[in-house]
Image (tube, rainbow, N blue to C red):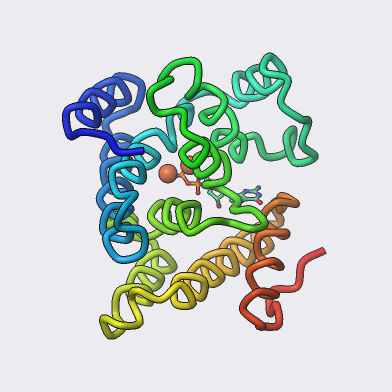
Length: 213
Ligand code: GDP
Ligand code: FE
Ligand code: FE
């Protein structure tokens, strides 16, 4: 699917109404990063990637109770980490709202990428990986881990930048960072995060160094 600049601009103003100014700045940062990654890795899908990025944190401002209520109302499957870590639900609730509220943007690729943007998933497509990575390395993120992954992705020769192996390597390291971060804080690690990590290690022929339960 291709979107015009006018359609994207309309989407940005709708989403801006629902996000805090700081969150919206992050959203635009993810859009820019996703477009840059898309130019390299999925050039025919840049406008669709932009739309997914604009929509990815649509329900981020909902409270934990609202996230859980919306999950139930939509009949979305109960997740184990749900009660302990409702912040991981916002991708699922955002994905569920897209067909209702933004039907023109309800493509399978946008919905799936938004749904898995926090945890990753098994069998991520390049489209999914671009949104997942863009969310972590967008220019507004200043944490040392995020800066390091931004460098790790961009600071390589041009021919390597376009390779899906390079993308996989950085996505794997982002998942590793997330698992380590959660373990250090003794926070529950979602099953989907573990599955995403194991899957990408297996496909890259790399032994998973972050041990997971
Ligand atoms: P944001 O919405 O742009 O702030 O970013 P994300 O959607 O990627 O992540 C939201 C939060 O969820 C981050 O603080 C992550 O560390 C956290 N997170 C990611 N995976 C997991 C998980 O498996 N379990 C828990 N508890 N938190 C996670
Ligand atoms: Fe998010
Ligand atoms: Fe985000």
